[in-house]
Image (cartoon, rainbow, N blue to C red; front, side):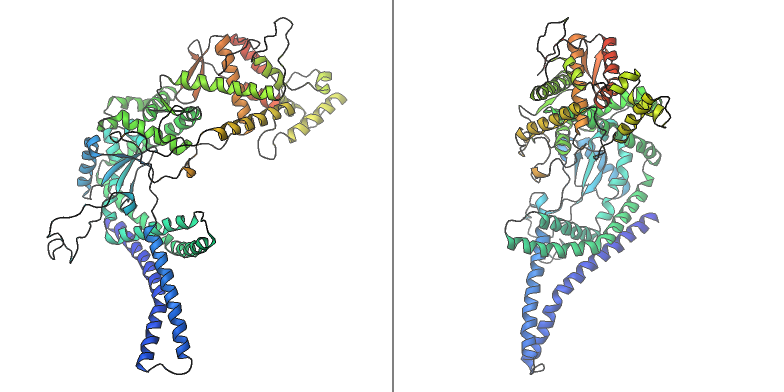
Length: 622
């Protein structure tokens, strides 16, 4: 009963969308109909005399203009290419077991099977209509003479192309983290959506809405000449008006389709689907953490991890070790993973990883000397070590540009190399007379709590409290970022931002050519515009404070590796990590922020002394 109710609601909304299309066609034909009536009346002698001849010609010219405009709008809507999600197509020969699972699932649901399967580097699954001629090769010609015969092929004079089923798009992290049964349970409501999608009214309504949306995108593109801009502006106004008119009905239609599909899928692995939904949320959390903490530093260094989906399994397994709530998830790893349904999961994972780098970072479409894949075993040396040393080198270049001298230690010969002591001395805020007279050794944030109420014991403390209150008011700048420790620190942060911007501007432009051979599965780059990349940036551009903190952290890690025997490492949940005797060094970030924001180096110096790091020793840079 629920399936029929949802499908009926979707069909009724689809008819409402088609009625809007019919009304638009009627409005376009109305002036022509009036002109025909006037012309026929004039030729028969029923409408003559007075101003009728002038009215007849005015209406005829108006009807011709309206028909011409309507034909132009219809042509733009028909030829506009609907948006297609960037995916990695999976041929049936490369995943026969996966296709068999989907077809068996469609048979159990009594719906048409999807026409193809594709993967997307995201934790989601959906059906996508790709029946537009621009989205695929032309249909094969029918050479059977009786295909179009009446009563045999269903057509009167020419062969009719059967509507193709939509493409099933599956999130690639699901294949690696989920088990086969869980994947089938998650895909059940998605595959069930092919049933309502096959209805002619729903399919026609979707094509109309997608055509309008694509036409709006065409009219929004920058045009060259003023005449073209004027024409596209008129077409855009009409298509936006039609799109707003049918937007509500289209949304309700999709809700009805989803409700019908969910109701139909209730009979397939209902209990397992509840458990699988928990895995969907867990996979999404692990995928987001892996991209932002692990993959993004590699992309910035011109390296792209070639096994991101396998990294999701490692990240979530690490989570199960740290979080007691996730202990039961690791026990599932003994069951058959869904990636076993692929013939070559490694090549598919590599193609999905390259697509993820292109989507979320805007990297090149194919590997090259400056855009090379990296394995997880090589990540600490190829990414972490190079990232830290590159950022440390950039930090010292900016210090050189600012004219910062190397520190002079009477006990050590001045070697003039890049040292951590040079950075610490430059970022240390000069002591104020008030704090010297009062012999204050507390942190500035502690001073806020002690003197923020205005209670003072003597004149010196009152003056210090006034200064601290002023600093507290200025703690957050106009851009919402905390104010840095001193003017020298702010100048260094600005210099780092400018230097990084120059390096990014000097980087070669990304290429949009095909990546890989014809036999290797890979993303379809033919419908992409490089100017739109990245489509989904993971993080906004780093502020000057964040850049400075990252570069100081990199310099500290370089000094620890070169003078204290530390090593670069990879934490699956937090990204690059500093390992000391095989154990991850903790509590470095807050101490670096204290130096950057407050100009207080003592917490960081204590941390360095505890690990045996010598700041006065030069470090090796890239």
